[in-house]
Length: 388
Ligand SMILES: Nc1ncnc2c1ncn2[C@@H]1O[C@H](COP(=O)(O)OP(=O)(O)OP(=O)(O)O)[C@@H](O)[C@H]1O
Ligand SMILES: [Mg+2]
Image (cartoon, rainbow, N blue to C red; front, side, top):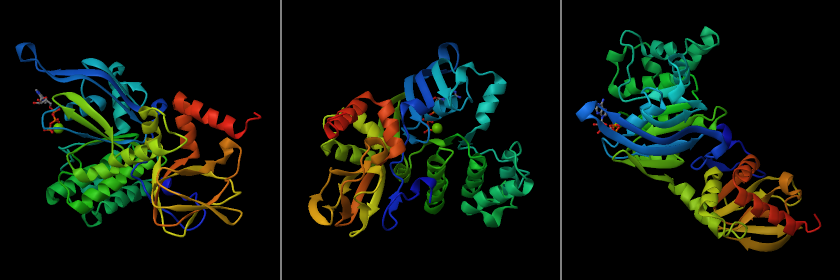
């Protein structure tokens, strides 16, 4: 379980799927590309392969890039990774202007990026373990600690029996997993992955995606950009960027975020907010499920979460008396530290439910980033406390 799955709940343990845990708030960008173009070749042979691409990716987001072969995905990825000279446009990565970096700074930036590329470039004379261990050479920590960390990661990737094998003694998929362990062992701030699961069977592919999702949801809030055609990856992503003929043609949320945005649009409080605002809120909400009979919030208690019903039915009561049934698109709970009021109703799941949850820190972040949401909340507060 990732750190994000920590329970804030009253009542039995909820199950949480991390499908929509995203942090794409503009203030905290990991990647900002502006009008990036790129040409290969010289003179008459000079061919443009990227055309004015702009892309923003927030810290902790998992973004997939798809598109036909030759559409420019790898080229864009290598530009973002400071592996290629920027010819036109600007790219900033984790706060550094990539085009303006000297070689030493570019090297420093690249050491904080985990590259998972198609050609994995393992050292042929080093074992699986030594290949991963190499990556930790510059990190502080005892030898024992580093060895444990490398062996642990290789173990999670199903290679505990292969630590002492040379690359030549490993299958293509196993070599790929060694390369993935090497890219992730230092918990980089950014992971750039080009078809990371292509050579992997379903189970190893799943483990790799879970690892990436956990890095993104964990304290490091690693940003992950994955080029892939693998449909399974979409369930672990916050956003899908589609590229055709050197141009980003779509930059959309995954199905889960779309589902949340639709439910938000039904909500009485949020009705009428712009699509951009709803999208922003949807992107920071997480999905949780509850069994029938579970209490979700309790009257009179402080709370730090706002819930929106995605499916199922809830029952609200006050002072032990039945009040109301709540359905799809209706919200409850309260971010009490902000609104200055305790939770007003006890709400329990009547059926199995899917809930979309906005936590206090994310609520504040959306508030800061979006004026229209802020003024909506302000008028709500006025209506609640007319004396203020
Ligand atoms: N070194 C190079 N020299 C000349 N042209 C290149 C070079 N590398 C790539 N190209 C061209 O640039 C375009 C974009 O290539 P890129 O590798 O970025 O595509 P891609 O979307 O990653 O494709 P794939 O899905 O097949 O990996 C293609 O038309 C390709 O032929
Ligand atoms: Mg490619």
